Length: 347
Picture 1 (cartoon, rainbow, N blue to C red):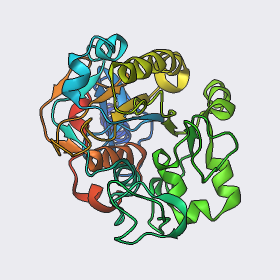
Picture 2: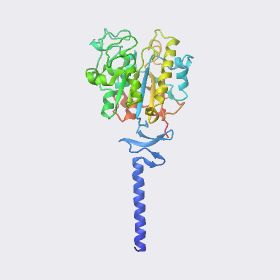
Picture 3: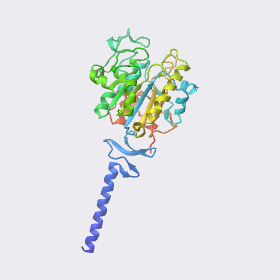
Picture 4: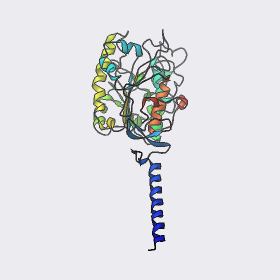
């Protein structure tokens, strides 16, 4: 080979090497210390807390598993001032939290619908998944003896469309897909029971909305769904007894102190997971202070430990975050909401 030919060969090899490096950078692999693998469409390789992770355009990291635990009727100020919730208050140092996070309505059910469908769906009471249709006469903040199933597209629908698995676990439900409240089990805290494409499809409902004790421990130890929704019973979610006392806070604190470490010990959490603990509304239920901040804690290898956001946010922000984290369609008011990307580390 001539000297000129050798020079051209070297230049060609350098060009091929540069193209290969460029291709790797586009794929998010081995560039700048990142090793995301092939990122899904509309995401880019980045990092949170030094961990390589694909991120949505909003900055929300792509999660492999998300655990949403819904608690009840507690203002942020009430929780932080109490000596009866030492475990939860201790979590603030490990979690990313919000000082200006709010519910969207009163009483409970409209907030649960907002988190899972992007709207309250015209519901203004704690009505039932089945029964005679609600009217202005039988549906109010104090009365809800009516049925308010609705056809709204919900989080379960868009997760399935995005190829993600999901399951809701309700404590004390007993059998799967129970549409009637009893004892410490409250249907109004299990929003997936209110969507007609779920509650009228017996097989789908039974597969996705199940009793906590019968389903969650086994699934956590085995095939954990991508998205997990957890509704504790009325004692463990801080709702009962009524009127609320320090006992409510102590009961919820004890329950979370047992459940959260179990989740954190799993590979589902450690490898790209997140736990969202959020309350539905403030402890005065809109009767005195209609919009007091409520607690939200995000625990994740990607979250900013000890971070406190002062950005105004609500349940639509949370729904937008979950949608972005799984590459799913944003529903209703969450389409224009600011997701909670700020709670996750930028690098």
